[in-house]
Amino acid sequence: MTNLISVITPVHAPAAEYLADAYKSLLDQELPDGWDWQWVIQEDGETDAVRPYVPDDARISFGQGRPGRAGVARTMALSRAEGRYVKVLDADDMLTPGSLARDLAALEHDPELGWATSRVLDLLPDGSTVGFDQDPPEGPIDMGAVLAHWKAHNYRAQVHPATLFVRRDLLLALGGWMALPASEDTGLLLALSAVSRGWFSAETGLLYRKWPGQVTSQAAHVNEGEREARFAVVEARARVLAAMDGWRFGGNG
Image (cartoon, rainbow, N blue to C red; front, side, top):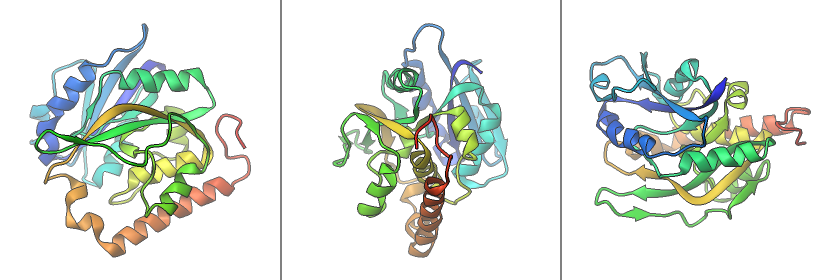
């Protein structure tokens, strides 16, 4: 693996038009000498609606596959991820300047950190932004802290999985994203927290676009029966990982 950050983006046809903004946010990133990014875009489906929006850049890899929701698209994209680190970037979101460099600096400085996250601002349709009132202080996040907060705050984590930056080897060891219709990113975040310490950057790292067509705004996303089932398996996985002797990243345990 080279000094490369693999930015993984799942996309479905309704969000394809936002790829241009995501791409611009990647172009605005500045990395240390010797580092670069690749953008691995994976369509959740096999239509003709997404490819026209994929920028012409040698650092971009575009793939398609049978529809299976974002978790499947992300995990399939891992087959083309060549970097030492993987960064999550949804098609309708945007990185802020310096986001990749801050994530990279945190994990390069401390080899016992498995992952990093950052502050998020919701980007509303009128262009205004709204922050989150439960951000932790900048610094390391202890193992297990994300699950504890998630359980105590109505299944809402104190850090956002849409900002995840993770060591590729650790991501692969956990099997990528969970095979769920939603919450697959939360499932991965809790699993990572169960086996490794993380990092939170208090500087805003992502603009999280709110728009009517996004998957998380659909009624099915909050169906109570499905939601309970998703969260049950997400929690169970994290607890089993935390209880497994010797399953720790970076010598923690």
